[in-house]
Image 1 (cartoon, rainbow, N blue to C red):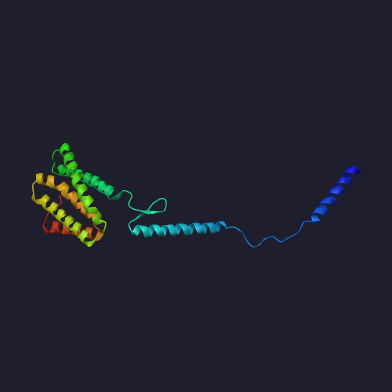
Image 2: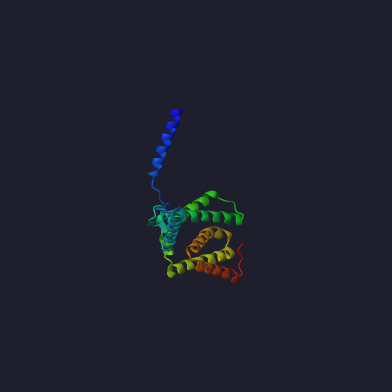
Length: 211
């Protein structure tokens, strides 16, 4: 027992001696040495806002921003757009052909309708590939060209539907309707609305019916 008490007293004296050698100092109140979470969040927000402004500026110039941050052209190109428009307008031609047959209560000849729609695809593709790039240029001359095509095809379609026989209407309505819709799509909103007003005015001025 006496030996254990002697050893414990020696250990206490050694710990006191070691404690006296420890230098006391004030805590560091100068702040964090690295960036805080708030600073990282603000930096991230600034980067996102800057990226959005770049995308808005590039979209006004007719470009698209790719995944790596570079600015590139339309990914499908003019040929891809021509194919897309040709297929879409071809389906519209097919739909109008079916609707005209139902309007006049005629038996639908599917083989003939498919053949006419297939024959219209090369023509539509040629027109779109030649005129669609002009429509994206926003030139007044190009917009006026589509305006004339839209007004002419719309008014003639109304005239043919009210004055010609059903067989002539069945042949002319699908291509005229497709040309009318496509020309309206290519125009800017003021020109498109004006062309539709011209067709409506022609309808009422001639006392025609739409059915």
